[in-house]
Amino acid sequence: MTNLLLKTFIKDYSKTDNPKIRAAYGKLAGFVGIVCNFILFVAKILIGTISGSVSITADAVNNLSDASSSIVSLLGFKLAEKPADTEHPYGHGRYEYLSALSVAVIIILIGFELFKTSIGKIINPSTVNFSWVLVIVLSLSIIIKLWMMVFNNKLGKAIKSDTLIATAQDSRNDVISTLAVLLAAIISEFTSLQLDGWIGLGVAVFILVSGFGLIKGTIDPMLGRAPDAEFVKKVHDKIMSYDGVLGVHDLIVHDYGPCRQFASVHVEMAAEDDVLKSHDVIDNIEYDFIDDLGLNMIVHYDPIVTKNEVVSNMRYEISQIVKTINESLTIHDLRVVPGVTHTNLVFDCLANFDLGLSDYELKCAISDAVKSVHPEYNCVITIDKNYAPIP
Image (cartoon, rainbow, N blue to C red):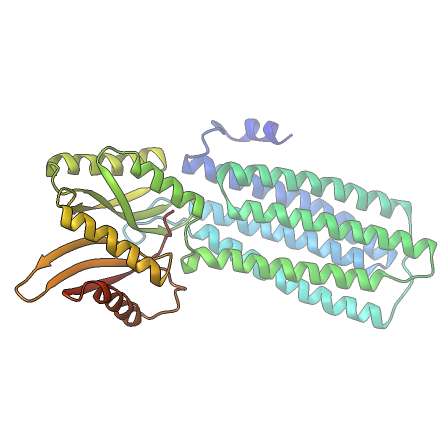
């Protein structure tokens, strides 16, 4: 069914790295979500009203919120595909994050309303009118939501969309909540237990938890979430595959929306090599990243001395010394500047944000550790922050 919809409504649907195809996936998911959830809402609200069940009504309103969410998601994908302009040179991709945030807020507001209604039903319980039509409607709802879970999950993975993957998780949550409502209706019919209000309360709590989880998931990339470790490793391994590259550090990735990432990185190459040749390699790295991964990459060239034994030995020794302070610490751009009375060791140290030491404390710790071994050396240290930990 999913492949049939893709083939019918999206031309060249297999080219998911194309921003226009990606937007088409999002819009298709939005349309499908609107139609399916609205049908489920109408069916459940009728059954809930006739039977007097607050839990079924709560589940119906949950479907209505899902339909509203699909509308917002559809709008988000539509706005996100707008091309870059003078005022927004990085494009409009973050509209997708904003739409997901709006969806989360809608879900939370509806969850609070259902919570209050369910509390009222627990305090003042009433009998639910059971019918097999109710069972059929809720069973069909579970089947439809299971398909929507698979549908959104497949599309979300195809275009690497957190919004669609979250929608798939929401459909999974709906399956669980509707199943709970169905079981409550059956139990209440064949026993004296009145579970309607309690099940409605459980559905409301489930909606609230889901909404707060979605808020965190959508705010993180807007706040500047660290890039995925697998992505960082992929970038590192690709750069290291080029001839002449000796090391990679100071990778920074900026996220302006799905498929709209910009990055900068420092690449170490032998200072003794021909500069024009090294520059040509760097140009190739930048071109290949935009062609292969759609990543706008700016590469900074760091020449390092490789044929001076003193510098090479010192680079290795300082690398080992900083690891005695913390295993995660690394150094780069080391220069040895000899003087009459002392020798300056000029280098950068890459530190994680959770190290527990201030930049000043870290500099002092490294300087003291070096002087304990080489009192004639004076350390001139620049502390770099590890924005994207490289393996």
